Amino acid sequence: MQYRAIGVLAYKEFRDCIRNRWVLAVTLIFAAFALAITYFGAAQQGTVGFRGIEATIASLVSLVIYLVPLIALILGFDAIVGERERGSLDLLLSMPVTRVELLLGKFLGLAAALAGATLIGFGAAGALLMFSAPAGSWHHYLGFMFSAVLLGLAFLSLSMLVSVLAADRGRASATAIVVWFFFVLVYDLLLLGLLVATGGRFGADALPYLLLLNPADVFRILNIFGMDEVRTWYGLTQVFPQGWASPLPLVAVMLGWIIIPLALASWRFRK
Image: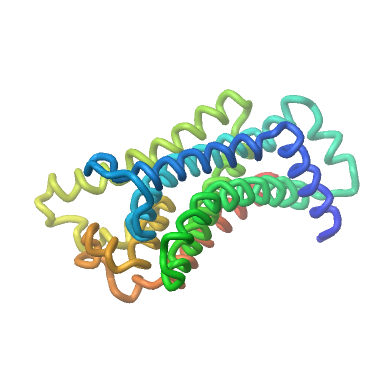
């Protein structure tokens, strides 16, 4: 594998994102929403201002689950199928680069753009929080930003798989929207409906492991179990195995959500 070729392709993809100001737009969106939630998150209780880091992260988790997967899917859904429709895919493949190197180069370039926008956007709110929060709690916010990057990369990997499998950009965009609806809105409703319909007799024991089949739920659990106060609010400690309730196995699951769809896309793209 030619790592230099992958690096050149990744740099070109990242530079294209910079040129069309995509990174700037997403960074401003992340920063605006994060600052608004950080400052006005307690408005329903009649107060405004910066709250504790744990309360702020609990509010930002919901924002990230809706916003980051959607932006990652929009960013990557036409990475391959778009080149195919424009006729530039054959030109790229005529160069001394393999299909796997092309796929990895595009993924790494888009991943760098998405990770940069996420870290800078949410870092702006984090910088303000750190003036009012004790230094001992800063690592919670750093862990939250790191897990947000992993969530974005997981859905970017899914979007690359969609882009390879789709016949045209229209079908790719429709599939990307379906993927977002399923993992962000529908999956948890299906699990809850199964438990309620069966009175908890079916699926209750498997529920913690079924949650791991959704990267959005893995992100939620990763942040919940990192903070004592938030853990109590959600009450998942009653149903989630203690053996999985640490960052390392949950990060490993999230890495699986990044690697497996990308490996499937690579396998299909070589055919």
